[in-house]
Amino acid sequence: MIVKLTTSELEYWQKQWLKDEATDTAFNLILEEDGDLETAFNELFQEKNGTIPSFNNQSLWEVILQVMRQEICGENDSLKSQIQAVRNNPGKTSILTGIIIYIIEKCPLPLDTALATMILLYLLKVGIDIFCDYTAN
Image (cartoon, rainbow, N blue to C red; front, side, top):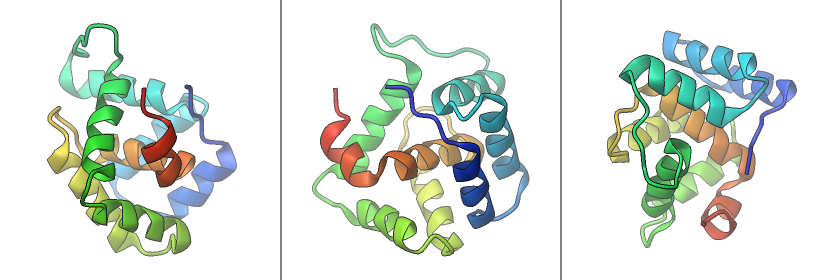
């Protein structure tokens, strides 16, 4: 499933994030890729890490989302609650920062703030309940 952010969605979320180089990189690359999060993610991952690992019949993006689904949607849903809180109160930049740090820490692949920002934008776009309940393979 290709998930794209519209220009207005990108502009909206860009206003909610703290301004820094990693965030600017993430948003600019997503804009360059016409809102396509997976393509932007893959491009940035390859730029930062050299090659994209091979995972049998799954893309890097699918593997990342699968790992995040296990971490976010498992028995301890405190991160799920925080993501829901962002959708209800997007001006809370401290919550955004905390979620990004959590994503970086929990992902077994090398991620930085810009890559984690793209993952969080995906979660905000599809909605955390849909992500947890309906997007699993």
